[in-house]
Length: 121
Image 1 (tube, rainbow, N blue to C red):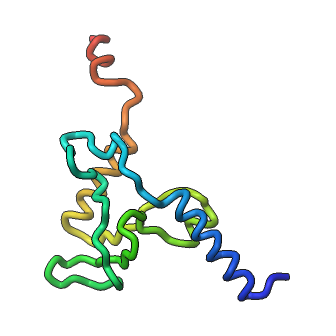
Image 2: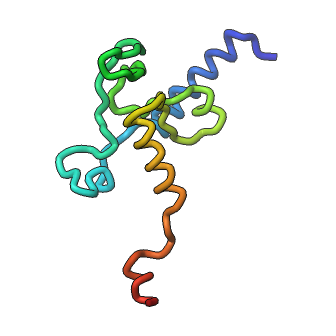
């Protein structure tokens, strides 16, 4: 049976491996679609933030970011589910509205392109 220290060493090693393989962002053509020439539409690289904190001026939670090319992630989700994900603190306001529109757009994507639908009319 694994001791706690052994388990933690193995877990941290898995976080490192999965993080490099799944969470590191490298800009590709898709990053510059929709008029985003010269900048990543996924907002990479992130600003470096030494520790998580609440910003009173913007009324937002800023999560710690020690590597500007890595998505914000939860180590447990990363290791046990082994997929990329992006954690954001969405309390209200612009961030919540943006998330709502993104989710609705994502789940209602049509398999058929607009020009294909129009040709059916």
